[in-house]
Length: 201
Image (cartoon, rainbow, N blue to C red; front, side, top):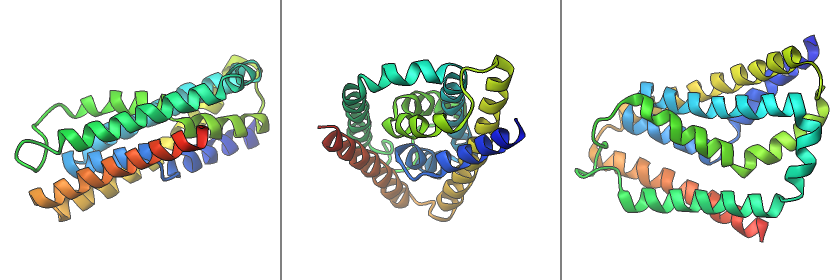
C-alpha cells in the first residue's frame, strides 16, 4: 500500500493546487478576514476532499457509473450554484463600510467551503479520472488510510493558500483594497460557473 499512499498524498496536493473557484474563495476569505478564517475555509475544502476520497477508495467502482449517467445534470447544477454564489458576493459586497465584513466567528468560514467543494464539478471530474489508478472496493482500513493521505496533501495546500491570502490582506489592508479583493474573488467564481455551464450545455 506504500506507493498508493504516497500517490494519494500527492494527488491531494495536486487537487488542492488547481486554481479554481474553491481556491479563490479560500484566498479571498483569508485576505479579507485573516489567516484563521482562511484556514477554516481551507479545512472545509480538505474535509470535502476527504469525503470524496473515502467514497472513491471504498465504493468508487460502483459509484462512478451511477454518477456518469447523470453527468450533464450534475455539471449544470453545480455551475448554477457557482454562478449564484458569484452573483450573491457581487451584490452583497464586502461589507457596509466597503471594507472588511462585520466580525464573525472564523469557524463559520468552514461550512460554505465544505459544501461548495462537495458540489464543485471540477472535484467530481478529477476524482473520476484518478480513482481507476488506485485500489477501490478493497478493505475499509485501506480506504481510510488512502483517504486521510489525500486529505493531508489537500490540507497542506489549503493552508498555504490561506497564508498567501492573509499576507496579501495584511499588505493591502485598506477598505478599497478589500473591496477589490472581494470583487475579484466573486468575479472569478462567477466566471468558473459560467464556463462550467457553457461546457455542460
